[in-house]
Picture 1 (cartoon, rainbow, N blue to C red):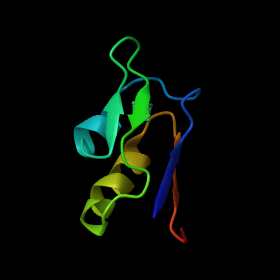
Picture 2: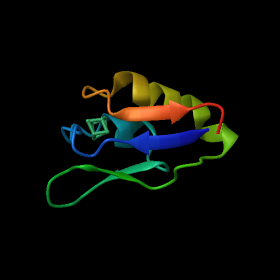
Picture 3: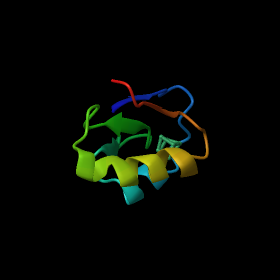
Picture 4: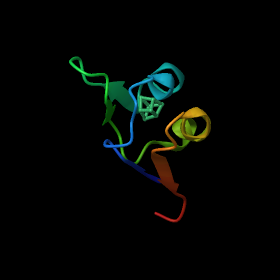
Length: 66
Ligand code: SF4
């Protein structure tokens, strides 16, 4: 799995960080998402899928083939 995020669409809601804190973080100043791990281990997949599903800006994209 390969993750990409569209920082310009992120609204800084932090849902992804709450669900998958090992994969996502937020900038201190404006709360915009920071991708910590673009190719997470398999045991992170469930959280990553959930984070992408709940992201209110729909800016987390997953490539299952990568
Ligand atoms: S859940 Fe989406 S909008 Fe919220 S901080 Fe994460 S990437 Fe940004």
